[in-house]
Image (cartoon, rainbow, N blue to C red):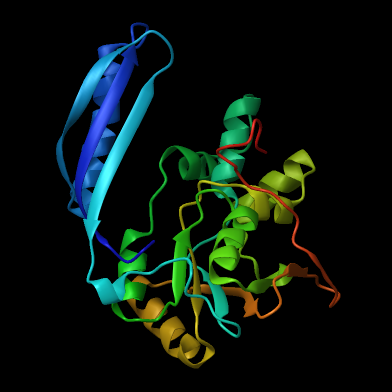
Length: 257
């Protein structure tokens, strides 16, 4: 999310006695697969016994030219807001695991994959940074409603998010209909999507959209704009503006949604 190329990983694991060898082998197979996909070297770490839960701590290093590094503090009034993927799928997948039971695999399986096998948008972040399209960028690990506030706070700006522009997948809409939920709330408040939130100057927006579509074969989605006033608002379908609902994961709160 800062425009760096990943380099090395250090993995520390504390394993409870109840976990069998096959479980850990499966974990490391997934780790090696992702490392190979993105050219990351797993250089070491530590393995020990846990008297409590399974604990996994991964430290990653990366490298980028100084002028290419993207911070959360670079957004300016008039910049357009973009996301590189649909929102809410991973949170819905977690909810399905918690609920248990049966549901149609046509929409349930993709949601489970979004949670259990997430794919970080590393190539997308590198592409956007190397071409100088973005003024600020971060990953949506905690949810749009939470993470957008970080960019606005660091950049000392506000934002308007357009309700009808938020990208919501077909499987999330069917999941929401099945359980009587509101898909917009899921898209705003769910975390762990690991797509990117970025700001782009309006004069570069068309060029960026065309280049992204050509490189990745899918569109990058505009969802709003940065404003001078330090308010974060949701533009509703009927043309009104309201405060963007709070939501997302807070690592330091006693409870998070």
